[in-house]
Image 1 (cartoon, rainbow, N blue to C red):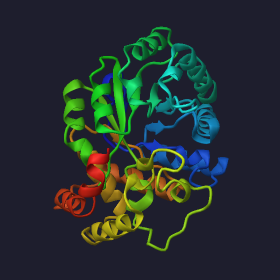
Image 2 (cartoon, rainbow, N blue to C red):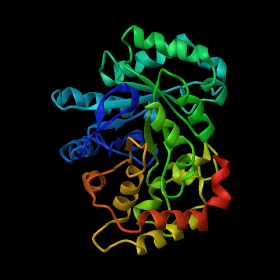
Image 3 (spheres, helix red, strand yellow):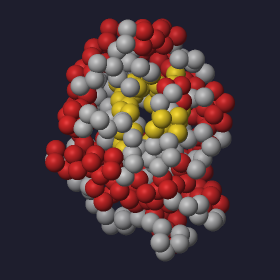
Length: 326
């Protein structure tokens, strides 16, 4: 895969990365061997970007990546992590002392003296607008604990507020064929400012895998079972906040529009990374086959009519119910 610059970090990364939320167990159990196999397959396929967070499995995802890196010291890799969800989501918790504690914990888990990129993990809007927060983050850069920082957000307004901050290197936001609002203002603003965009949930929690039907069930510990309506955390993180049955039917229509040789997830990922301003999409993978298939989207030739199909589906199924919410 050709590389892209990750915003103000200056680091070159692959346009298809690897999201590792699944290593923490919120998508069902994943063994250490399976996680290592996924990382091996991803890197062998050209992936140079892993994304994690300190709360994925209470640090397990970070620890697995850290161990893998120790075993593969010569592999060029950028690891982005996130912090802030270990505490109650109130602005008073987003202070320098907590940042230091969270960053040091991630440094230990990832076995890195300096974190490549740490992102505030979908904090309250008041936090994103607080200059003292960025002063504390700047101090972590100054002392070498982190090389750069960014913000993971839920809404377009939060993204725009983060992009306006001169020290923010990147913004992570949900973007996929069922969530197009970032195209309106967020991507143009990021492109103009030189801020990287990491597109998370690019397959809409698997709706755009092409595998699910309205009868598909999910394990008790899978967030696609217990968080469909925001019972545990933001509803937009599960199936992008769209109604599950509507998402299945829209995905089936999407699949029917594709050439026979192109899989649904590959087309969905290729569409995301084709958007001006997107640095990388970070899909998860539970096995090496998924990892290789995802990575192949980074080299997929343009598909005639794909962009028009995405916009038509969005206008038909989701604009009226999803667009203004986020």
